Length: 328
Image 1 (tube, rainbow, N blue to C red):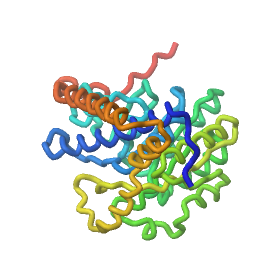
Image 2: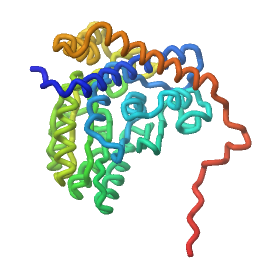
Image 3: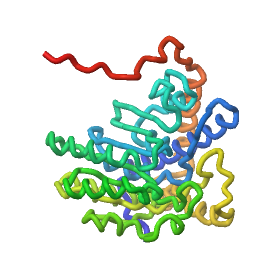
């Protein structure tokens, strides 16, 4: 059963965000094959509904932390596409001055705290940020995206335990894309119902269709409302799927083409687009205008990155340490 329709403006915003993420990722893959982007590149194609849906429930004061597959989260959060692409190019016009690359996006203005390359390494950071807001009586929620592979790490259990113990205002979003790198869920988790892992710590937990952006948005709305009302942390397990390989170096020997094609039939962008057309909230002309807007933004992002400059060698020791404040 499909989720009830939100206001058209919210629906169209999610459709635009998902389309931007999809086209941005495809363009990033193209630039990688042209050696304009180097190093690691992990694409979010297929999982767009999770990032776009969850972000609708958050405010500008909330904190967001993510994994190394974070381009989609960053775009949905409102980070500038040009600054993201420039970061992937490794130029100093990037959001992390070209030093972080694809896996370490950061933006203070949108309170986007990574882009973290260590699996599960940002989970305790999320607990810490949420605890700080709780102690300082700030109304912010900390949203932490992670994959099901991180849920097999010890740090996941430590973080869930402390989050529940302290009742911190945190939304944990597990993007279960079925494979931790090349290992299927059933081979890495003795208990494959990830919702029960949150429930074991007394954390309200819910499974969500991560290919349905409306379902994700409604679940995130309910979760954030509970958190803001003092209910403590919430875990959402979003069942999703990446259409592309784990990274650009992945030969994808662990899954068959038929499985990938099966999941592609549930493409979250096509799903929402067809729903909106059936409901009369979108027509072909509006869709083409949306596509043109996205393409214009992508072209601008590429131009920013292509015009970027490498950091001077003399500056390489800057931004390594932080000067300690002087004590009076």
